[in-house]
Length: 433
Ligand code: LLP
Image (cartoon, rainbow, N blue to C red):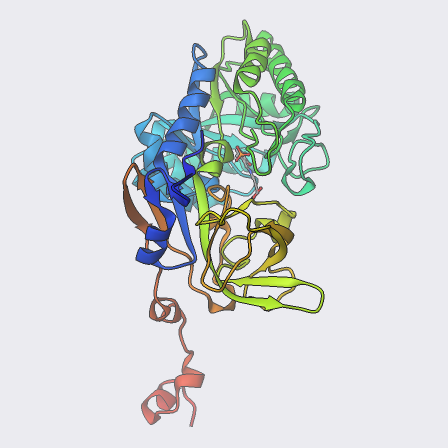
């Protein structure tokens, strides 16, 4: 059951009316439900029960410390892809020995930092990365724990922009080249070979691609073990999809069944890296209608959220449900409306021809399923202030990231002295006369 439901005609996050939050923090604003995050984690953990599994939350889905901390308290580790995410996971209290570091382009500085933190595992994606990590580890008199991410050449059947498992994608090491690179890794004194990692894409609703990718990874694991490689871990990535538009939710037990089948008798610890599954349905973006504009052929609800706050509809043509925060009066017929933001780009459109109850300026709308890849992908385009983030727990809520003020954003910039140097003192210093 969703944590976002109407109570007496008023849409609530758990027991808190969204209108109350909008009053308190203004709009646009992100609102997350603790219960929904915890429920998603429990469902996944329960499906995997009995397997030797660590669930490493993919921090890229939502890096707010409060959400990482909510999951950490339940026992989750973290999957990070940058020094920034690693620092966030540590700051939220995730133990370093439950953190895996993924990503195709980790820099030397990032590798060195993660090594100093004593993380569980580096998921290495290329030979040059492996050799760089080896050099850095040797300089420190250390060994880096490594899983090699393979590219199993499986089509995830999801949106092209978020598919990662085919041979013509930049991710992982081609499965055919993998044995030679495993042999190289085994020979490097600064590398401690731990296992295999695989991740084929995001928002998968069909489980068949997982079956294919896991079977290929497990076969390689077995082959390498038989050749004497000391592997102990299989990282099966993330990718399970969520409901945006009444899709059929992937069956977690069936997913776990596929894992059990692929890994039976392997003697491997397992890692999972779910992101969207844990937080996607746990967040909404609140926005108010600024103007209702009746065009000759279309009706526009111009809202105060924009593509800088939530870019998924514009980048992936993603469909997000939009609900009024107050239920429509009975008998009010829905009308088609384009829900658009204030940014000067035609693509700044959340929905076209969406059937919504008649709206008036000031109406509060809720853009659903915005817990994952939403706030984290925001920007300050058009010098708009990033939306604040609020976490609800039962009948309480807390601002877990305040809206910065304009002064804070403007003061990040600096004037070079050739512009500021109107005063004689500055001119002399810069040598301009
Ligand atoms: N592990 C790796 C190596 C990944 O690249 C990703 C996501 C995950 C785990 C987590 O995948 P999830 O369980 O969340 O599907 N911005 C896009 C999604 C990009 C996903 C990138 N990688 C969107 O808004 O749909």
